[in-house]
Image 1: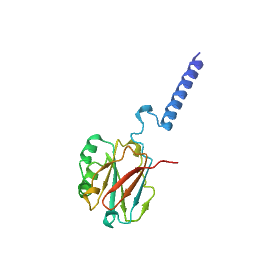
Image 2: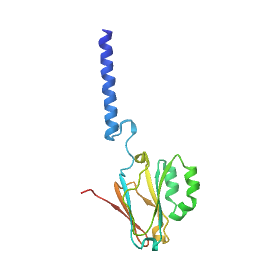
Image 3: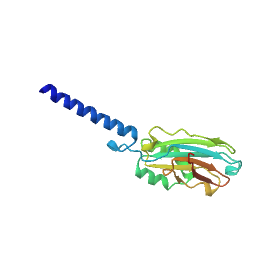
Image 4: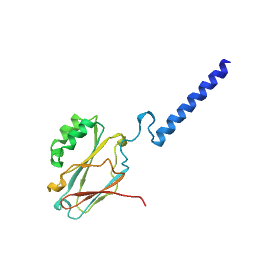
Length: 163
């Protein structure tokens, strides 16, 4: 009788483990591990006259804390870059940053995303443009396959669809 009960528990735990692993692999919300954003890829394309023929510093900030996200969303591009070192050190557990220096007439087809990037509830982009039009912070969490077009006075964000 004891052997039979042991077998039932073993089957139960094996089945439970398979359900949990299947949920994790499929991306559903088992144990609260569902992705908080859908971003899969980010590419950048710069026009010949982007930023008035000057390189553009771009930082994409993956934020896991809502309070930090609100604080950073109030910054402009020059504000972020002026305080970047301090902010990255202060919030090193809550943010991950990917940076690129983009020269005119160039293409970065795919930026490497940080490990566990899907766990960021907010994704912000800061650009260090000469023109005020290119200095506004952008929210990126709604994109899946993002292309950033750097232009003379500012940038455009485009959702790329696989066809």
